[in-house]
Length: 52
Length: 401
Image 1 (tube, rainbow over the protein chains, first blue to last red):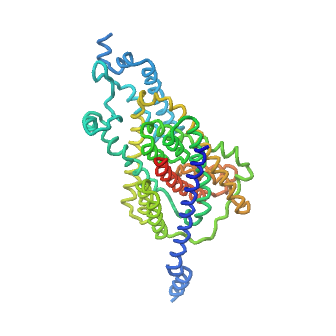
Image 2: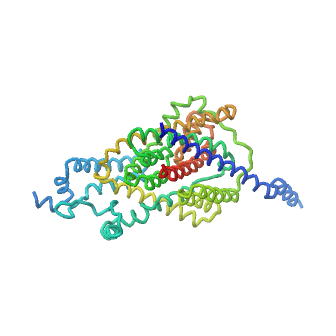
Image 3: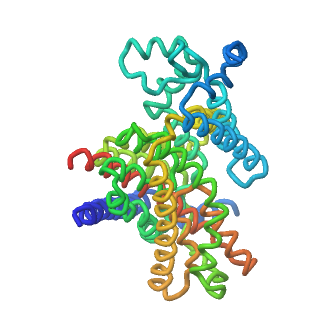
């Protein structure tokens, strides 16, 4: 019984860390996308300058 | 006869040793030859099995007399622990330098992980982090559920944790955990792990067909129109994930560093380093890993009553992980409004890239237009990350119990 509880606790720890990593990815991607110049705007600007 | 036995000591030691050791040596020689044959046929992974089979056959054939009462080989001495005996072994045993300087300290596992990092694409992890992580967590079922089963079968906590990690289907992680927690049985655990990992390509398709009906296997998954992930974003993820996970799990930091560094090198486009890690490090490490595993398969090492238990537990661990992965696939299928192929779940078992390829192959068998590889690779890479997390948790927690 004790081993099952230990295994459950280890799994829970792994789940918490994995979810934290997933959140970290989301936050990181959000920050990167916010900080980098808007791709769509850049593309349209480039296209506009191509025509000149 | 005495003269012949002294002249041909490999045969002479067979007559001198205990019958059970002599029989085990002959059996292991035959198994070594079978491994080479199965590796050549492609039934088992040839990159590991051919060098391993040669090592196994040679180490059990090449036993000689060190003194009238002592036998041994000139390959390696795993029992050497104090400075004097290690120095002696380094001068006498041909593979001792590799064992001492690359195997026993996990350098070889780190080199393999650098190579895996180069092969991996974390783009899909960044696109679908929660989906990929959820599948990977389900696919760790074997790594967790095997632990109490192993303890019930008579193993102590350290040994139980070491064999449980086989469920993660990640060879270097198994090697790492076994060396950290159960060095006395790391040889049988690692041999069993690599043997079973070689067999996943043949066994998992049957598991998929048993658990996923044909009409679900043929489901296509719509590719989202999310913008491409740039190499800069991937490198940012590599360094942040490496630092964050190393902060949480310092014992797994060398492996985490190796994996994420390999990936960052690939993404930064340093082709010379990519070739170094992929062509040189990965294949050199894999070759010596196979060879060393074979050389370590001495009859006296494997004649351990725990080997049979480990063989059973290895199957249980990998089987449960496969089942857990497919259950994870079903959970995502239900969450996504039945617009997800549950076969992708098997890719949560982190045998990169084998299980992802199996998932794609099984889907394509029933529907040639079912392209699920990118989702499978996301789950696959998350499987590596969750296995590293579980390894770190086991190695950190078990010694405290």
